[in-house]
Length: 110
Length: 110
Image (cartoon, rainbow over all chains, first blue to last red; front, side):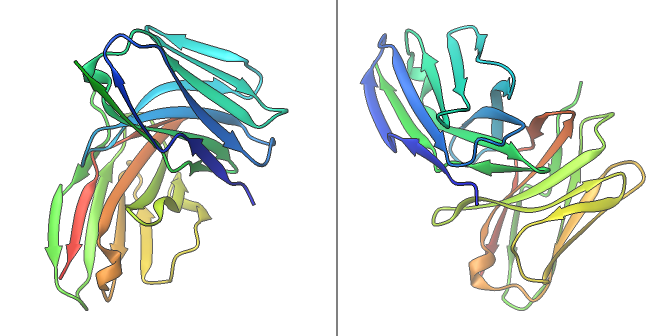
């Protein structure tokens, strides 16, 4: 049974820092991995999608990597801003459904 | 291009009642999935529909059901509501591998 874990559960940093959020999964047989952002009480915003054949994807200040063999993905956020404050979720796509991690709650203070 | 639209945004129901939630996917997307999000269990998969057929179902009781129409719009129904059904219900549509989520319906059962 696929299990997805995110570390750390919460993170509070000053503006300008570079951050790494971690996601690990137990079964490497995934179609792809997707990173989302969720603001309080809101839906999920897709940040990056990494196909199983890819190693990384970049969008602006965000870079996500995928290592299927070790069951790990990282989301790198460069030069963090207060507007980046949110919960970040990773999800693995496995047989027509997404299996989510528990999320990392990020707070970036000025 | 319009995103995924969920209605209503908020609902308050009494135990024992039933409720129907609606999801309009992004135009051209034929796959619609539903997820339940609670503080204790996180995001859990309910079911997935593709071209009016349920392709996958999560581990929820039979009180949770859904359907998809020929225009890809989907509804989910919960009968005999329980207090534990209080949650944020999220709908996602996808074309290929990437999932796009709506803003969710916040259901409160009193």
